[in-house]
Length: 129
Length: 141
Image (tube, rainbow over all chains, first blue to last red; front, top):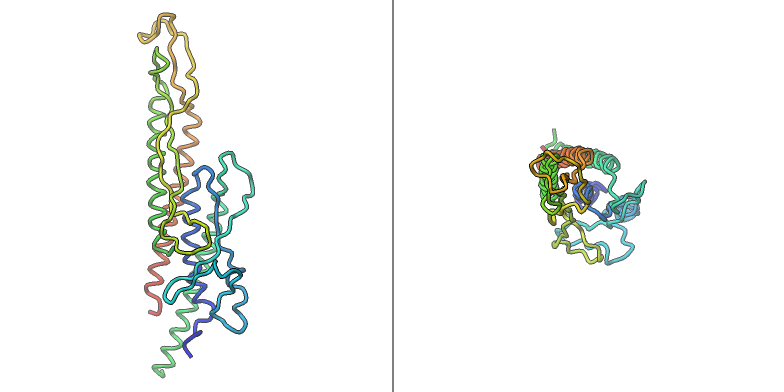
């Protein structure tokens, strides 16, 4: 019964944590020549989990995702398309990264809130009052 | 990569931007210095950034995850210094010319502003990661 109690939010939380470090890395390398900005495509990684197996991540290529027993699911890192070309080959655009960072922040807190709510519900059911 | 790696990544960025600010300050301080010998005159210094590769990336997808930034070294600008006719300057050469440093103050100011913004953004990233981690630790309470 407790296998998929948190639904999609458990892998979503882990993935959002990973995305946070990818975005932070983009922001750290905003001045490095020839650095290409990366990001995790959520819709693709978590797609297909609403159906039969809520916790199974859809794997397009078995080599991409390596979920281990206690480890984090490795999301697929893609390259971000820049809006403008730059002289030194760096594709990081700071406002784009900041917006993605803020959005990820909100999603992470939303997942946390959902999980907290579920935990509170469980405690209520266990305690019976 | 987990949330904790954000601290290392942003910390490396703060360090790199600080070095960049230091070289900018040094350039601005020496923008007006002159010398009679073109090989001795001050040339603008710039830090070269490089993305650090993450050795702990265990996934086999063939993509190396980078984990922060580091300063490869400081390079001197190769722009030729301009000459100025100042016969009364004690450093003037025998023709009365001195060589000015090749520092462009406006460019250095733009560099300083850019370094400032990057620094603030990375501090924000650290603060956000810390807040999210604290909330995660207190999950369920």
